[in-house]
Image (cartoon, rainbow, N blue to C red; front, side, top):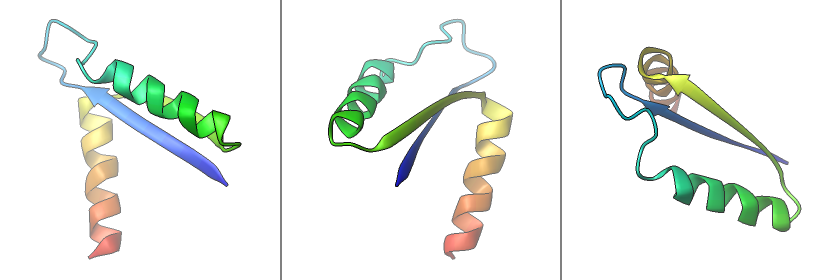
Length: 60
């Protein structure tokens, strides 16, 4: 089973690295240690918002 971790930052922010990035990296490492295939993607805000909206639409 593959796990995708998708994270983003807002285009207007000066700091492109959100404060929770270390938590995402830790989660990825823990998942890999458990034997999962992990992929991480850093997307711009517009792309990630569109992806999030599509995922929510499929759930509802």
